[in-house]
Length: 269
Length: 246
Image (cartoon, rainbow over all chains, first blue to last red; front, side, top):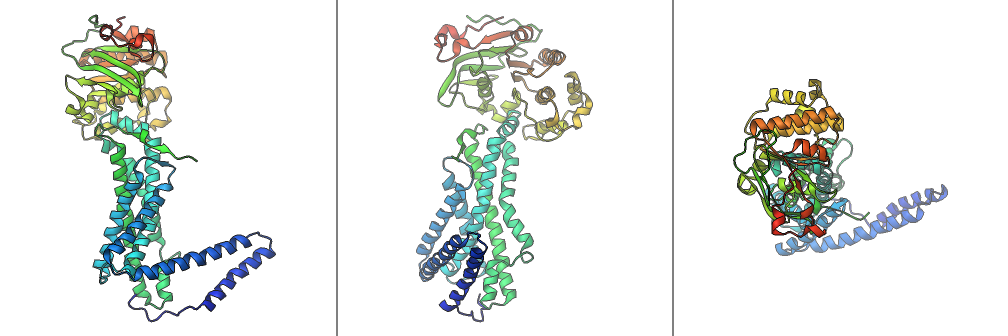
């Protein structure tokens, strides 16, 4: 980012031309009677409004020079991410949201601060221009991983209850009985980021790296940033998935080495 | 008062192996059975009798500690399970559920699994496993098959062998022979009688087969007086000790 040699600034005229491209798609839809014009128009409008809103908010956020305020915004982002993460699975249990919050908070904060303070060495380390987008990327990926992990765990402890209890009845500790479902769930949570890491640069260029290159950054430096970002996301996703798995385990298994699958409830369809 | 149970099969008794003291079980907040007092001695087998859905399975699960009882306690050789350690307690007081649960692996892998737990003090007894499988009428070739591909009756026998291999002191058997034919039922009963006689294996057996209960078990414990919501369910002092004896 420091190697940016100067971004080509876009004016509203440039945006109007881009809008015309969507207009062409609309005309094609109209002529072929695809019936997509209204939805395309609405989607385009939402894109502009939502991103402009984010742009203005980020402009305001990036001007903040107070670690507490940055921490507050980060916490709000984590609250939103944890709520989204627990909404996706078809099952839930009481107290799942704060466990997701704890997992994302720990993994997100530790990873972001490590990157800003140790790797990129931003001064000050809480500079919102770095902290907020990095945390956003971590949470975006972390919530997907956590959500998949949680979904798999609750499914396992509901559907494979008999298997777990068979092991407990034969003398397994709760950890021994839960280990396989826990490992399966963490693996499932990690699949998206591992898949992304396997094909990055081959199937598609990551958005952040593309953005930097379009802004005129040295491609090799953009690659270095992307490597840091991928590793950061992988680390945060694994930590949040593992932590969530352990918190769910602690909730669903008692000190008597029992599985309390009765605490899990199906969400209404 | 409680009649001293007769030991049908020559097992030696010494002290109380398993004791249910004022045990009550239920589903959620709803009590099903309450105030059960029952003692099981080494080598003794007791049939639990009661109407369908009265909570016999829940009672066995509560004894095993897979669910908490709503009242009372279970003692193994005078000790609370938490003092023994739950995994070690369940190694000694082992539940074999009515619907056998097999891992998606070979029969051998299913039999070996309990020997991978931290509580296992000994290596997998391969020869004894082969001998036990043979005793319950399963051919050696079965060991390499996926356990989930076996019939219900075969799985039930594998499940029993898996529990026996760990050397429990008490088996909690929930309808252990429902899927078995006559020959297999005889083989299982004979094997359990031998285990009772040779090493004092005690058994608490849920069965709907009264003939089997009379044939196999030393006595029957009628749960009807302990059921909640029935005229005879009021727990009274006399009821505690009024175990039905065949």
